[in-house]
Image 1 (cartoon, helix red, strand yellow):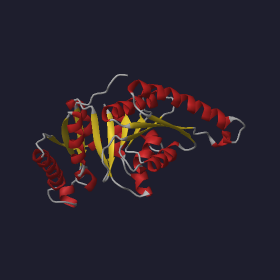
Image 2 (cartoon, one colour):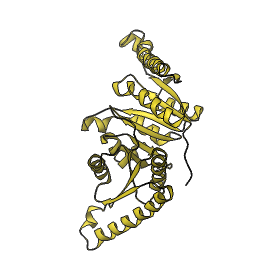
Image 3 (tube, rainbow, N blue to C red):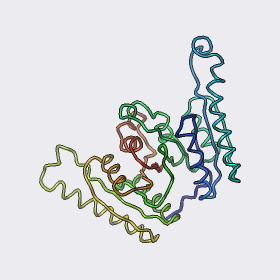
Image 4 (cartoon, rainbow, N blue to C red):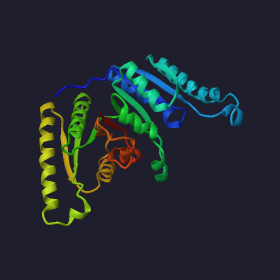
Length: 284
């Protein structure tokens, strides 16, 4: 199985609480991977005359907290004897983050995730969604107060090309850091078919065959693989399993041929990233 070395990590910051702690996790991860880390922050562009109607020196007031966060990140890195490059941009955050990732040849983008109420989950997260869909590389989402660890890695396996790709990422990390992988297949049977005779048993049989094939990949790398087949509702099963087993990282596959931003909301990735208790790696 081909390894996926990470040489450049791009950590995107704003001045919120979860992002202020993000640079610590970024530095720890970069140190363990022997990768360089770049911190980027973006002052959102705005329409209309905010200087006149809302704020005096609006752009400066928006920019100063972000630049302060970048300075704090760089100072923290220096205190540890590590290096961190910083970049500040002005514009649409998702576009600028993606642009910097392309320019710097990023292998991994780190984003912070705030703890939110259910209503907020449905309204927020557009930058995260667009970076996941349109970014050039994997995206690691780190919930507020969470640590990046690779002891117990959960991957959703469905048999699709994207999920198998995610499985390879999970095995690669487990092999590198001495962790174990939990492979979860969710039957996800439509309601109108769930009560038909044999449908559930056939779906479970298919699931066990798929995870059995994945176990053989783990055997090749000498990585322990724990398997499970559950149903229904993939996002609920993934979250429940992660909490029950004390999972440190969830890995999910993302198709490169996304059908658009609106398709992201309501997807398994969107629901899991908004509710997971641990970091989530979205493998492109």
